[in-house]
Image (cartoon, rainbow, N blue to C red; front, side, top):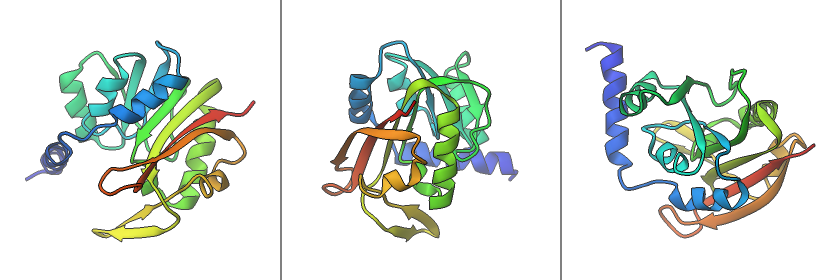
Length: 189
């Protein structure tokens, strides 16, 4: 089997595994802060579940590092703007009103998260917003040979480079009570 087939198969397996899980509740919180029709970049869109929900009220651009996920979403939405982006470097000349991710940035090392927030600041329009969900806590967990960083409202500011202020944060349950946290941040002038 070729690499493209293997990557596409992994993307389809992920889509099946995540069926029924979406960020609708988090997006509803974001919508309290974001004007309808705003431009939103989703980092790590995966199969596009949250992208579809965000598109109900906003102009969306999807992004992922995986060509298989980009291909999967493009098959469903041929006219949607999709970018192959790394969550750290975010190499694009585009500017957005908001950047969103659902359980993506916790996969970055702590140093990579600092770099990502610096780059997010650069590609936001003035007074732009970011909305990210992460695992809640102050630890690093290794699961299936992958490291996951946990953050809280106390620890996250260390990674924001003084470029963002926390407008809102709330713990919520993904698998067990208070295992996750959502942040809405505003770009500092």
